[in-house]
Image (tube, helix red, strand yellow):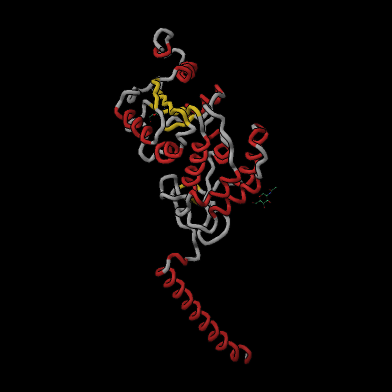
Length: 299
Ligand SMILES: *[C@@H]1O[C@H](CO)[C@@H](O)[C@H](O)[C@H]1NC(C)=O
Ligand SMILES: *[C@@H]1O[C@H](CO)[C@@H](O)[C@H](O)[C@H]1NC(C)=O
C-alpha cells in the first residue's frame, strides 16, 4: 500500500512532463514544417504519374543483356554500371529538377553508332511505326536503339532528400519541364538524332488533329535541331492517314509547309510523301477489304 502511495505521484508527474515534452516537440515540428516545406521529413510529395516500375533494376539489367545478345554489334555494355548511372542521375534530387545533363554519364555508357539511311523518327504514330519496323526491319526507331529498347515503357524517379527510387508516384510526362522521364527521353532522342546520317525518314499522322508536328514535340524541340546537316543528306517526311480515318493533313497542307520551313531553317534538306506505299501496304494487310486497299485505288 505504502508503495502505491509513494510511487503514484512520481509516475504521474513523470508522465505529465513527458506529455508536455511531446506536445512541445509536435508543435516545433509543425512550425518548422509549415515554414520550411523543403525540410519536411516526409518527402513523398504527390505527383500525377505512376511510381517507379517495380523490379526496375532487374528489368534494365535484363534488357541490357538481351539487347547485346540480339545486336552483338552494339559492343560490350556495362549493364550494372548503366543501372548505377541511372540511380546516380536521379536519387536525392527533386524529380522535377532533373536535366539532360544529369544523364550525361549514362549517355556516355550507352553510345551507339547508327547505320546511315536507317533512322526513322515519328510523332503521333507510335503504334503504326513500330508495327512497320517489326514487319520490315529496314529502319531503326528510337525504341530499337540501345537506350530506347532498355528504357521503353519504364517509369522512375528519385526522392528529393533520400536515396533510392520513389515507388509511390513520379511526375507525369508533362507535369513539369525538367522531370526525370522527359529529360531522359530528350537525352536519348538527342543522342539518336546526333548519331543519324544519310537520309532520315519521319512518319507523321495525317489523320491527327491540329499541327502535324506539335511545337512541343520531341521531333521539333530535340530531333530536328540536333541532326548534323553535314551528315544528314535529307529529311523525308511520310504523311500517313489512318486507313479508316480522315485525311486532315497532306504534304501540301499549311502545317506541313510550316514544318518544311522549320526543317530548312536548320539547314536540312526536306522532302515529303503522302501515304508512303510500303506503310499503306501494311495498313492494307490489316484491313484488306477497305476501299483504299483496292489494288486500283491505292497508288
Ligand atoms: C561498370 O560501371 C561501374 C559503375 O560506373 C564501375 O564501377 C565498374 O568498374 C564498371 N565495370 C566495368 C567492367 O567497366
Ligand atoms: C493518328 O491520330 C489519330 C487521332 O489522334 C489516332 O486515332 C490514330 O491512332 C493515329 N494514327 C496512328 C497511325 O497512330
